[in-house]
Image 1 (tube, rainbow, N blue to C red):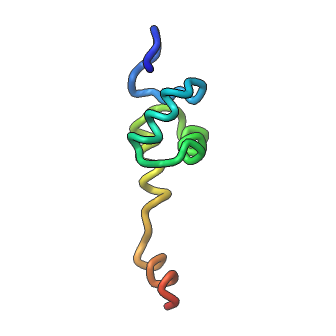
Image 2: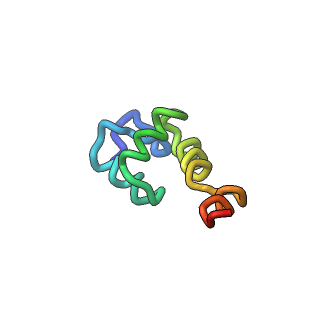
Amino acid sequence: MTQAGQQPDRIDLNDASALAHWARKLDTTEQQLRDAVAAVGDRATDVEGWLKGVHSTTNSDRVREAGG
């Protein structure tokens, strides 16, 4: 998964096994992972934070979903 010169906290979208690993580890789809890397870069901590922000909901979101 990590090749010579590649840091283990970086997400390599060109490596299918690394992409699958990070998608599982971050509990997301490969496409969402690609979108996150495009948005914030390939550092795993940045990607994780972005994904959490995208997937989190606010109270207003929950009220709207409930029809309020």
